Image (cartoon, rainbow, N blue to C red; front, side, top):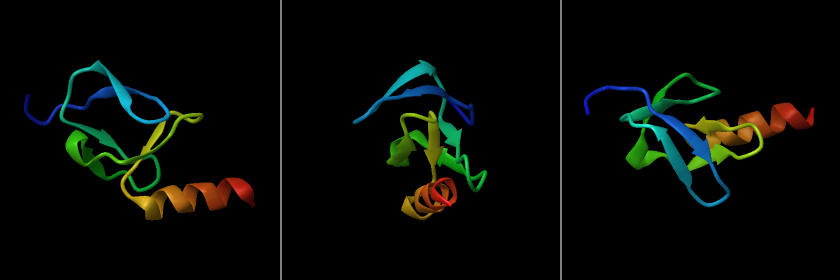
Length: 64
């Protein structure tokens, strides 16, 4: 597969691939995240994050 957006279901400790692909898009920064480097997501919002920085920004924004 080459340069195709994946569709995932985010679970508490992993994710399920709904549609095969190579990457997802960070919900905060818009950066492409290769699936092998995807480590941060929100199960309730079903959103991926590029890094802990974006995940923290999203959490801080929700709490204010």
